[in-house]
Picture (cartoon, rainbow, N blue to C red):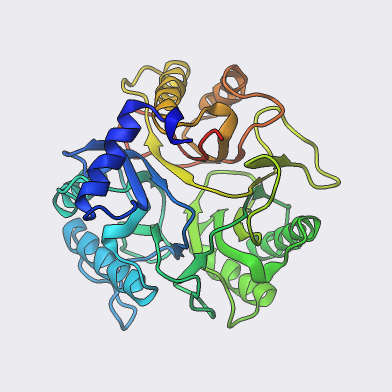
Amino acid sequence: MALRWTIPLAAAILIVWIASGGERPELAYIGFDRERGMCDAVIVDALPLAHTQQLLPLNADGRLSGKDAAAQIKRVFERLADTLAANRSGLDRLVKLNFVVACTEVVAAIERFLARQFASGRGPATSFVVSSLPHAGAVVAVDAVAVADSEAGKRGQADCRILPPGARVYIAGQAEPGKSLGEATRKTLESLRATLKFLGLSAKDVIQVKSFLTPMSAVAEVNDEMAKFFGRDDVPPQVFVEWRSSLPIEIELIVQAGKDRPGPVVEFLTPPGMKSSPVFSRVTRINRGKSIYISGLHGRKAAGPHDEIIDIFDRLGGILKKTGSDFKHLAKATYYVTTAETTRKMGELRPRYYDPRRPPSASLAPVAGVGLAGRSVTLDMIAVPVE
């Protein structure tokens, strides 16, 4: 496979190899932006990956740490460092950071922090979305993916769980209606149980739960239902984003699926009773090997949904090529949009880029903002190299 890599990828791997003293590299960093402290993409070997919960800027007593963005960002990273250390990982082994911010202005402060933290050029892939947060006064929260030394993660109401090397599954957002957020959560979790059963998996295999919900002020109802479904002492790490939808909640899952599997490196699956789509898969299963985490992308100009989406997908194609992948090997997509027109254009334009037989698992969330002023869409992706 190494013979098929592009020159930029080989150069990136060489840099990391030298920095690690000649040991086999676990991470390759593509397209580092020194001013923002992040990479376009990070390629990670088939290794244990720590997935954290959404971390808020809280002190040990559960109170908010600081009112200004700088203090809260500092506290969030202190909590992240502690969480990763407890799971035999660290900030120097980060693969992906997913930030939720209360307003777009916080993004610049985060990028300045990242530029200082990752001045070496080993910055993670990073994404931003604007949303209310599940704690009054908080302006920033983050969840992370990082390489860990052990497959043994903590259980219980976990702040982190380890995705072991081997097969792994991305279940697209599922949603069921309900008269309340709690009822909709319960019914959606039961729908996800059926999907897990189709895959030969169970709730015990879930590594992380991501919920798009409304209103954020009622998040306690979601937590109560999660505790009933998984068991109060065995809830996986959770991530929350407030969306603007007529449905109370949509839930997606990351799931461990056992040892390496034969067949294609990534499979695109439709559980019984669900309708397949030419623009997203209900389930994707990566059967083995490396993963490619791609930063959230925006249109370079505030030119309206059509031009933004075209620009984003053209840039995505270039990044995929540099990482040894392509559109047919996208496994997971998250699309954040701010307008109904952007949603419509996303559905209209995606078929230009996707093979209808193998589109990525995806969630599309209408949100308050996408992390860059004047833009109406952002997306981030997980892919695998072409075998």
